[in-house]
Length: 508
Ligand code: AMP
Image (cartoon, rainbow, N blue to C red; front, top):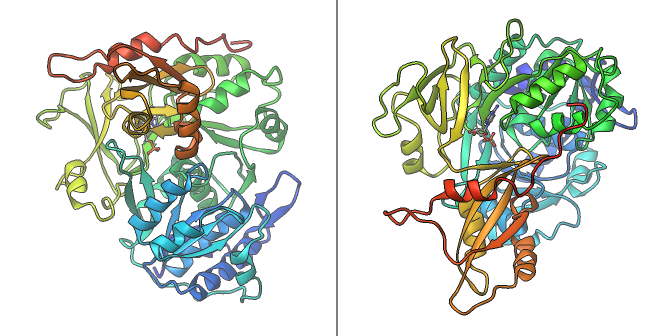
C-alpha cells in the first residue's frame, strides 16, 4: 500500500458525496469536499518548505479545516503534531523546539511569533472560520495531490504526554499504530457508513483525533462536529445521531439535564466513555435514565486503545473490559516485572500493533517504559478479574485527570515552588463532581513569609494551561512525609477529598 493511513482513512472516499462533517449551523462537508480541502492543504504544506518526515505543529481551534490539516499531513507524508489549545506560549515553545517542527500553525492573532522565531520555525495561521495565512496559501492550490508513499512503520503523528518530571515526551505513532487500532475498534464497535457520531471532543488528543475521527473516516460515516461539548446541544443532536464518544464529564453533565430520557436517546446505538475512570454510579444512573449501557474503554497517548467492554455481552460498570483483538495485556509486579496471577493488583503492561515506537529523542525514557520484548509499561495499576475484565484501580504515575485532561503534579509543584514566599508544595487531585478530579495545591510558606494566594493564582494563570491550575490553594505548616522523606500524597488526598463534595446528579 502506498500510504497506509491516508489511503484507508481518506483516499478511499474520493468522489463520495455523502456527508463527512455536519456542522452546528447545518453546513455539510462531504467526504469528497473534505479530501479536496486536504489536498489543497497538502500543497500548502509542501509550499511552506516541508518534506516527508518533517513535523508540522498545530495549535489551532477545532474546525473542519483543522481536521483537514491532519489528513493533509498524512497525504504529504508529514508528521502531524497537534497541540492543546490551552497551552501557553511557553509550553508551545517547548513542543516546537523539542520536535524540531519546521512549521507552526497557530490561531490568527496568537502571540507566537517569538516562539516560532526562537525555534527557527515558520509561523502560519489557521482560524476557526477557515481564515488565516495558511488557508490563504492553500486557496488557489490544486484540489488533487499526489499522495506521498509511506511504509507502515513510518511516523504519522507525535502526541506529547506530560512528563512526571515536568518534561513532556513526544510519543511517536506510526501509520500502522493508528490504522490497526481504527480497524479493530470499528469492527468491535460495529461502525458502518450509516453511523453519525456526535463529536464534541478536542482534536488534539488521542480520543477525539484518533479514536473518534479515524473510526468514522475509515468506515465512511459522518460526524456531527461540535466545537465543544454542550449537554443541551448534544441532546438536540441525538435524534439525528447514532453514537457518541465522551469523557466521563460528558455523562455527568448529561445526567444533570432533565431532557436526558429514554426517548431522547432512542436513536442512539452506542455511548462510549474513556480517558478517565467512569464511576460505576454514573454508569448505572445513565442506564436508569436512558436504558443505554455506556461502553467503557481504556487507552492512552502511547498505545491508542487497549481494552474495551464488549459491544455484545455484558458491559460491566467499573471495568474497562477485555484486551482488544491483537492486544496482549498482563499485570506485573512493579518491582520485579514478573507476571502476577489473575485477580492481583499490579502494573498494566500492553503489547500489540497499537503500541507506539518510542519517545522522540529520548531513548533512555523509551527504554524505561518500553521493554525490549515490546511490552509497554503503562504505569496504570490494575487487575484482571475472574471473568477476564480489566479493572483500573489506581495510577502509579500520580497523574491527576481533570475534565479528561492529564495533569502531572510535578509540573504544577514546580510552578508553585517558584512563587514568592513558597518554601515547597505538593499537588494532588480531589474528587470533583464536574471535572472528575480537580487540582489542589498545598503550600508550605517560607519561614516568616505569608504567601499571597491571590497573587500566586494570578501568576500561575499566566504560565500554566487553565486545566492545570489549582482550583484550590491551601496553606500548611509542613507536608506529611514518611521516614524516607517522601511526601505522603495519599494522606493529602484523604485530607482534600471532601473539598468539592458532590451534590447528587439530578435523577441519579
Ligand atoms: P492520555 O494519554 O491522555 O490518553 O491518558 C491516559 C491515561 O488515562 C491512562 O494511562 C489512564 O491512567 C487513564 N485512562 C484512560 N482511560 C481510562 C479509563 N477508562 N478508566 C480509567 N483511567 C483511564
